[in-house]
Image 1: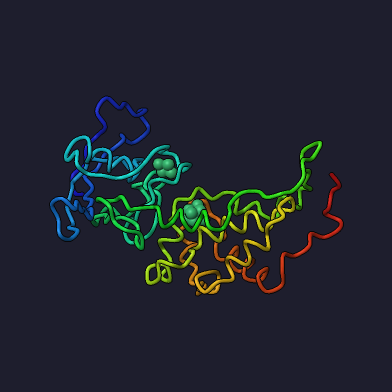
Image 2: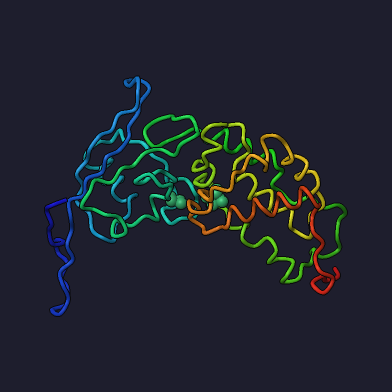
Length: 264
Ligand code: SF4
Ligand code: FES
């Protein structure tokens, strides 16, 4: 953290400060069931630039210091949702967390997301998460074979626009204290993905999903702590979506205003 260096070969214009790197300390919670009884925290010093991301730091550690460090990532650009982890105690995507946004005067703590079985280092078993997702039937269900596309008005499409943005990273579900204590709870992500179809004017299975979520492990387990909204890297209003599903369980799927309807 104390040391700094100028980027080799980088020539900043005369009136601009040179690009400097810093030594940053990452403390990573590691676990390998072959060798460890319990997870252990391991320190790594890494040379980074302010514009690097936590994912770059993990790559540098893996490629230059310890090839056994294990984590998931694919797109590296906030799209695939595979690198959610706890960074300084908050659920974040490693590929979207810039070093310059963290306090590098202190070590940066990195660990796996909570509430799902730990497999190795920063990797958890996502199957319980995807099982809940599958249970809410996250696909369009509409009868008949239309002659042309099923048309929606702009207002009808906007009704569920926010929840279409989910990338299934599990940052919300694994930040939820109810999920930590009761892994049976469907969790925010499953409810978000139910919302996406419940409020779709073309879908005909809203009541099926509402019945599924009107369960002791369904929407009523939500305690409105807002951890999920804070954690979502896509900016989805997760708690609001859960509240809308709760209201729909009580009152049924709300009708779209007549003025917003379009005829197919
Ligand atoms: S709602 Fe947000 S945090 Fe939750 S799984 Fe989807 S993208 Fe990730
Ligand atoms: S690696 Fe795909 S979202 Fe981060």
